[in-house]
Image (tube, rainbow, N blue to C red; front, side, top):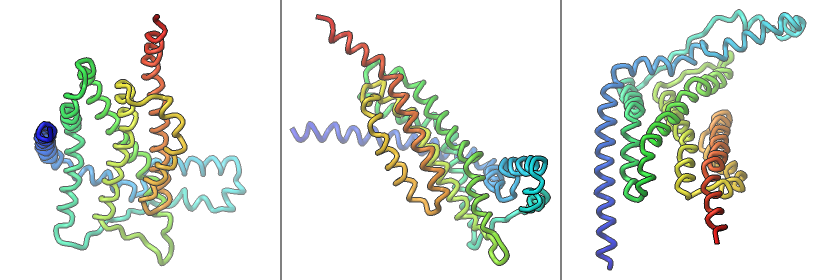
Length: 282
């Protein structure tokens, strides 16, 4: 009896090793492709350091509107200094030999991973496919497409919307005698880690969609647990040191849970209705 249990377990391990090897090979190939434009990615990550972000444009528009509508406030708070202030470029620094090279490797690895996301998710699907029905296995293309798309949306949402907010908030503490001196490793590692976090956060509705279609979760199961989801979001966000980063992680995380609740409602409703009809048949 014990041998019968051990054999399927070993087969699962062999299958898992096979899928992991394919994923690693795909990521290495993707890393080689991404190496060619890793410099452009680093320049994009550094963009908030120049102050040339959407936040600067929004701030100048608001100050211009204040000048036309309330010139007294505009003069009182010396907003013209911010409007006319030149962009100040902050440079990254490194203090260890080959540090920029290893940073380029990390950027290329993450970019390569994102490039081969369809392969990664397809391998994940193939690993869990033996436990699915024939009808459920047909969802492989929608799953791979949706999972890849939502991860990329989460990553771009962070880079374009959230990352400038974090850096702008950090630079706002600069004053006479207090200047920023960002280390390239700390700066890039922080950014890459949050790219992964936001990509995974945006995967939650896709995961819920699958579980709802398979009948594992439902609206009735998820909806009453909103307060626990808010608590869990706060705990996950609390692993980041500063308050702003905690907030920008907690809010999207809970928002994705709320979207997942409605996804479960939309895709679990028909199944629940069908089961009620079957139960009503004498």
